Length: 524
Image (cartoon, rainbow, N blue to C red):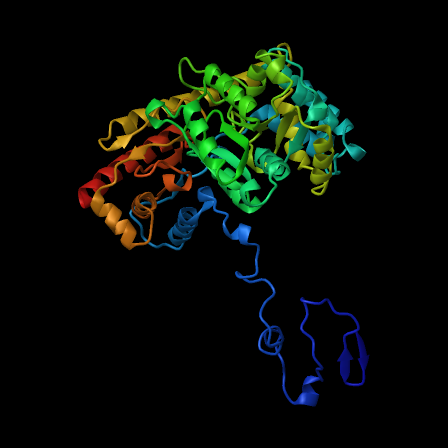
């Protein structure tokens, strides 16, 4: 800008962002003009970004886990802080799988290595165990300037990708894993969305269809909406402990081919929100189906350590794929995901995860490298934790017994809470709860009386949202309605985590049970 006398002239403007007209000084015009006036009436122009002009795909995005009921829960917390009387003294948030927020203590060894990497002078502290120091030195040596404050390669620190590859090989019984096919990410969610970006293309009936389980984790429906892809639902079998049925996959695929081009099949194992653990036979059948129908497989395996039920075992899709032989392992395209947020770690806030690709086209991989470079690199703290959990203390090292004890205690406690949740809900008439075989959630089915359904419709809410909102207002319990995850027509559910510590979980379950009984009495 340059000044001439009492007038100010703008020598450069950015179209669309600045409304300009000849403006004298306020004294010259005998009036003042506020910033609001300049942006509003004085410009005589609407905002550039409005609901009508914004990205239409973004408007379709919904994420129930942090939706309206959670916003109301946060408002209630503020009301309690302000002294407003409620029939409860706190809000218990059972809506999201955030272990540390629910009272789980961090694993000591993970935090020791992270502390050493964050503040390297601690390497001279004799109270820090030597095995934590050795891992910190290895990570720092792989960082520019020996600092985790520096950018890393966009694909992630090479030494940590090698640790991930070693971890996968050990998990899968020696099946080879190449660190060049591993991409570290800002949590598994980031890796899933990035992979979907590569897969979505076409227009009209040629638009990419993405097959997802119903019930599903809302990340998938949100990403599909945001990318303008087509959501293809296949329903899990609630009567068979939420099992995946190949005939149902086939039905969904053939119907979808009438209006889109399905080329992606997503699976979640162990299941979220349903808590089932897929058998090896089911995984084998899914791989065969993907091979026959030329589908790209996405295996969400972030709960792979969270298996509780007798007779259940985690099988990775990659392991089963390679055990099926070259006719499948050389052909089927697979992306499998893991995260530091779940299992025994619960380090949600550090945002660390990875994806391993199998049979990814080399030319597509080059495009993927370009795509991830736009975001520079994943959080290095999250990469660090990933390096620790894939290279944990070994027998004979100073931290081995304490690390193993902490890990075992977390998983054993989760198994007990899974059993407790099923036991309490199964004792309530009108609530049906499948066993929580794995993961961190229960997804009970509830009968909602017709009068309550009518009341929900009058309030403009889905019946299960109506139930969950009343549960929140009257008990302080925050759970997520099943309609946010998808469910068979005419059925109603809610998802709750099993993460609250045992005494708090028992209080939560008792409140839910008592409320449900009073709710059905009121509307029955």
